[in-house]
Image 1 (tube, each protein chain N blue to C red):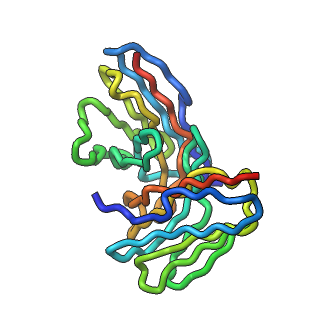
Image 2 (cartoon, rainbow over the protein chains, first blue to last red; image 1 turned 135 degrees about the vertical axis):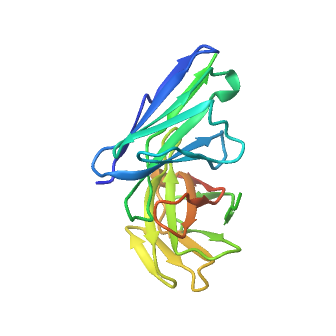
Image 3 (spheres, rainbow over the protein chains, first blue to last red; image 1 turned 45 degrees about the horizontal axis):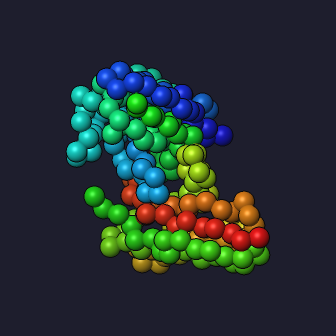
Length: 115
Length: 111
């Protein structure tokens, strides 16, 4: 149980285009999902907290207009990187938390490369 | 933001050796979690701890929730090559709230 999927696993896009990453909880309902960014050899950096049916809460320094988050259902949250630039290249990971649980389950991550 | 102090940063050990790593915090947590991350993958939950003093095992892994609620350790016994990876501790107080992460311990196992 507690499986979280992400799609795509890898994406390469040209500078200026937008990329959408999906995060799904496969066997549980997630009222809250989290989006992280991870640079090589570093820990996970929280970007935003996504609650189903409401606006995401962004961490300081994360541009909400650049990283659009939509949590339209209890099993799906999406992160759209708009007008991507090479500096947006990174490993993006989502996690999902079942309602009332302290534990979070992570997706396998999405490697974004912007050329 | 708030971060946990995790040590050591990296470890090189011989296969078969035991491993110990720990996390400390300046503030208390109600829950401690330990994750393992393989290269190019998302973290996988290893052990969750909910009560001060709690000692929990998962196969060769054992973790404890410190009595003060400000620390936790993870032990791996009889290490094997597939134990290689980065181990993260994380703390949280409430459900459905962001985790506070340590910087990770990079484990290398020499066969």
